[in-house]
Image (cartoon, rainbow, N blue to C red; front, side, top):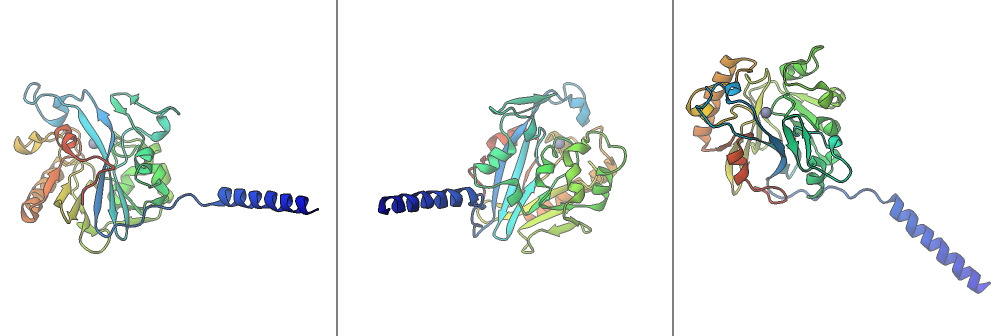
Length: 287
Ligand SMILES: [Zn+2]
């Protein structure tokens, strides 16, 4: 009896422990840091785009590969995902990358890069895209549970019956039902303390936007979206041939140049491979 009793107790305990393990919630996101951080992820590369697409004559600038970064901003009050890649994680085979689609290649999923620093897409407070082009939206659906920060003109263009050029509506269709904050002003202060600001910089698309960060050690930083692709677009005053409005782009570039001068911010052109090559990649971070 006694032996049976102990063994029954033992089995029951094992079951209880097993149930606890099974029922344990997925690990929660890391504790919020006390100061602002920025993580940079490698979301792929785009090869072989003609320089003529960006307003140059053949031979004026050497053709270059385009980097495709994704960024995670971690603030004491929450997190912001900024741009989500060119190739969806769902395109990766079980064993991992690289994956090539057309002229784009990615070697690591965005989810695995987030997981490496302890985050799941469902942990992320806010999602913002610099703009709707498909090389920035590939994993947008994974962040449908976040609060989406977007202007009305950009959102309207994204859900128009007919897709605009360089747009893959399927890649962000889940955002249609997301909690959304429509950005109505030239600046939106994401966490209310001036350290993470989305600035409207239209022209490349109707609601193109850029991200300004005040990092304690790194200093002020402007992540410029596709305001430029080649740095020479700034020095030689060239524009991509596929701007939504070249006039608006020119005005946005002038406004941002003034802002960068005033704030002393460094500016990162997202696609510029030379800039990207020098950046600390996650799990390292800027603070
Ligand atoms: Zn782009």
